[in-house]
Image 1 (cartoon, rainbow, N blue to C red):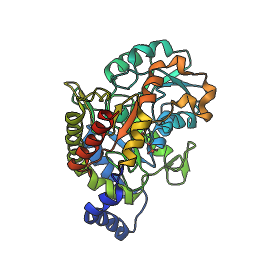
Image 2 (image 1 turned 180 degrees about the horizontal axis):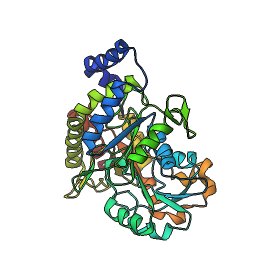
Image 3 (image 1 turned 135 degrees about the horizontal axis):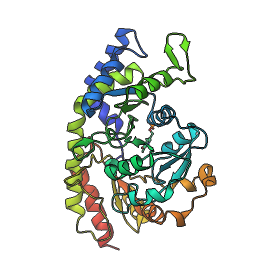
Image 4 (image 1 turned 135 degrees about the vertical axis):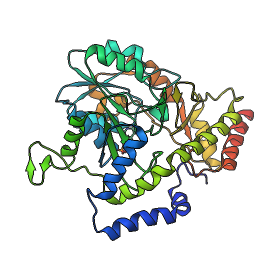
Length: 369
Ligand SMILES: Cc1ncc(COP(=O)(O)O)c(C=O)c1O
């Protein structure tokens, strides 16, 4: 079976490095808020070219605490998309915010900046663009709107570590950028982890305080906080992984080129857009579109290929989020795109011969229809 993600294989390949990082922490006797996290925060800030990085427990918490640090309060509206992962919206709700969904651009599958203005009301506090699947959103246009209407920007870069817009890293444009190091991510820990990044010292200090019970110094709590710390074992692994990240992203790109070469003449498959002069995709997911999704997915599974759907339904259709007043007619492109998307296996451990096998099966499926 070609698994969608294969973490046993990853561990087998990098056992020495992973065990080494874990053992280093175990031997240090220090497990929370220590040297590994400090050095990861420093290394990651250099990687991104940003002043401050604050490690937290997850990408969800990065968005939640980021919104809190920006002053989002009960009832404040936050503009985002409905084709993102549920945690984007869960985090808005944790901060007391109200999600306002804007439709996407069909090709990029990211927020359509041309539709943002219409969604702004007196209650709007922030725009939360998601760099979905590793492809950077049109952040320059979004920044312009935010400046004009005095709104905050908090980027959900959970899927886009290393992606660039005009040679600058996704996640470093807004007031805050949020990253997830969930195991499936391009920079994936062996457990939960996340980070917020910013060039604003006040915001960084605020999040540092929020992540640690609101302490400004030991046993001196001046705001209400939570416990959301990136632990030393995960930080140790991430310190090693960060050195591999560019190479892993290159491997993803190489596999994507192979997919594209193989599938470009299959007219029933719409391929995702590639990087161009301004947009550098880091290919977190390889998402194709087809009108026969269910049949193709079943056929691939029967032939030993695990695929996935990111995500099966727009967020406004999730039972818990139906009360925000959005329906398919408000977001026709989101609805259409989400009924067609299918994610094919893509990770640095995947082999070229496996990609060729998957493509052969897809071609066979359409040829024998
Ligand atoms: C777009 C997006 N936002 C937020 C998150 C939340 O990250 P985490 O799972 O680390 O909480 C994820 C990943 O799960 C994601 O893909």
